[in-house]
Length: 352
Image 1 (cartoon, rainbow, N blue to C red):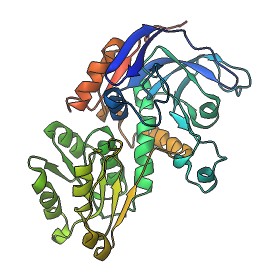
Image 2 (image 1 turned 120 degrees about the vertical axis):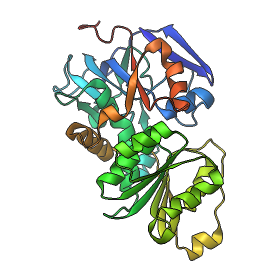
Image 3 (image 1 turned 180 degrees about the vertical axis):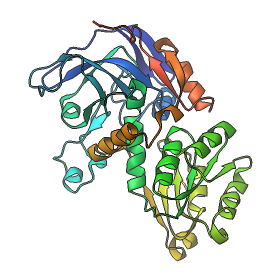
Image 4 (image 1 turned 60 degrees about the horizontal axis):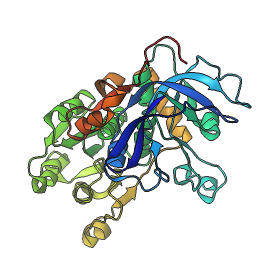
């Protein structure tokens, strides 16, 4: 089969590799649609500290498709021809963090990597916990949004947001827009900030009450605070960019007693500064949130199935598998929100 294979940062090659065979407890999925993702773009540019533990390897992790092969010991409900979507990891339920209910911090997360290909083998742990049949009427590309939306669901679940609160979201990329939508669904008044007018327009369509076009970063904090009641600051602020300087600005956007969710993953080794006066006397809560859990994955698929999060707002078009790097770079430049990657022969009725 054809696959995009990661060798090193900036070095991805399109190669013929063996079509995977299912091991015990595994299923093999013919990929109908994969999606571009900011994590994949960062991985292409600089590698990844946890997922890319061996090279060369196929990469990409948001996908949906059809089961084409089933290994021994798989539940009978998973049959060839079933339309499915899978998350990209599953916790072990044995380590310290799983036992204390922090599954996103699992020491033994089983990761799934290799969605930019014609097929993928889904590991046993993910089959058992994070594999779902795609609901009738849902497209493959809509289903593939399940994994990134699960991350945003986790982020919102960890951010206290009450009806009527003001929530600032920094970054209107795919994850930022998901935060906008989820916060609006909770009844919050959302202020979205971004460099792109097109992305801010998308934020308005998804429920943002106010938008701030970032032209001068030093004025961004003031612009957001002016849009909050009495200029006191947001009740909660979410960073969805992954830059330390934006982390610092996000902290300065909340009111005393507010919560800051630093969700965007920054480059390894990065650090940021925070005023001790602001943190201590303002009684701020500053927290990082990473990844998702099976509960958040289940919730994300339900939100997509009900139409509470409209999939069409996030998919800007399609590209062939051979154009995946160009597609990732287009997303990085803010020209699109997400693009659906169509593997070779993905729309043919039967394969192999």
